Length: 329
Ligand SMILES: [Zn+2]
Ligand SMILES: [Zn+2]
Ligand SMILES: [Zn+2]
Image (cartoon, rainbow, N blue to C red):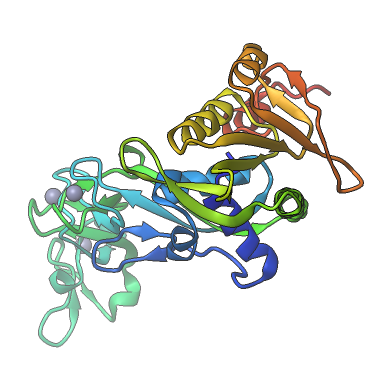
């Protein structure tokens, strides 16, 4: 969770070098990106939008509605355009006009049918009228394709790419948000940076040379981002340290695998003192991983507590379920 990229992103928001994360819409392709956030993240962090949503679910970022976007269900192009359409043949080629009705005989027609050369006349009962004011009028739409006349057109969305026309409910809806750092996010970054700095100081006091937010090469020759890399050339000793709030089994195993590929020892720092997962104690013991905890007094202590996995209280499903919960009273 607390990947080096995530820490970089939240640090930029915390320092103010980035004041918000805005979606950018490419007007040609309709594609939405978050370039400011993508720039801070690593490729291994995955889709920027997913990272932002995960951080928002954890209340580290808060989000503000910006706009809604509709995606074509046929070709998946983004940014469909609103159009009205004929209720009979679905054609978007409809014209808005007025429909007139002669109240005496009930005849209905378009303006042109009532306007003669120099007066107004009902084409049905041939009554001469002083003006169009003697007729009742209504808004009407005419379909240029099937010539149907109707009162209310259908609401449709039209794909700019494949020109497919679909009812809004059959398209894919996506809500675009802007993201800002929350108070909880500020606290999270401060703890992350404090813990990282303390580990660096601890290693430097032991004569290690340290690099913060760097990469190491794994067995498949990939560059893997790490929080801290420390080495002692004289004794040929290496340490890779990772800082997490509440690391889970994945975090522990990933740190272990990066460290073993780099022929380094692994140090895990938690800012909560907790590690999630039942089988984790064996993994830690088997690999001789050091686990440290950031205390309230900003010191590092060699301790941790194993806790069981619980559902994220703020997950999207959780929030939706709350909305649909039967209301009492
Ligand atoms: Zn399309
Ligand atoms: Zn008439
Ligand atoms: Zn039609």
